[in-house]
Image (tube, rainbow, N blue to C red; front, side, top):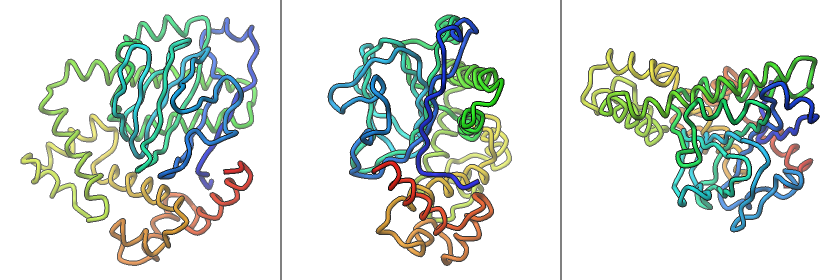
Length: 303
């Protein structure tokens, strides 16, 4: 299935559903280009839309995950903080907040909203709070797959989809809680080594640096590095690098001034054909097909 540059879905809900425990209210993702206005006009209904500089309050919880780029987040309990790819933050009901990508980088964000009879209790049990809503997610692959599963199940709202989606939200909150717990309980030198390795992979995304070279640069053995990385991140170093290249390719394809050849060389491919083969393997479409889909979606959304 071809992936668009944005997907926004507000689910059909009724007040009696709140008694079920946790229900999903909205899910989506969007790519914001450098210097593009945020949020895009018309992408959200009244009550969800906000203007930069004013912020908003929501009647529900939302998990927001930054998959690409960087920006800022602030709320009633948190002073303005820099946030970047690999971090997520939890928005609390009736808590004023504001966030936006930097003008220079843009970003790709995912989000899911939820509420319900047991939502507050569950969030508290997961030790997530208004004072510490920002979490760095190391199991990047699994976290994004949960968003993708919620999107897939909510698209047609088939019978029982809310049960599936609420279960995945609980799983997502569990990952966030574990990440918070990990911050305080896992050997910090180990955590910092893996954090540095991910930063290096992003830094050298177009240089074809191997996992073995990264381990050497960090001063650790490759076997230990590979096992530890997979345990904490949920994918091997090589798989994670492929995912980064794919996400970066998608992001660059949203820029109409860049040719497929430009993108191929920036990402370290020998020629555009290699990028096309790589893209078809992972997305089942060519880079040009993907770009054309973006154009169609932008025309329909008025961007």
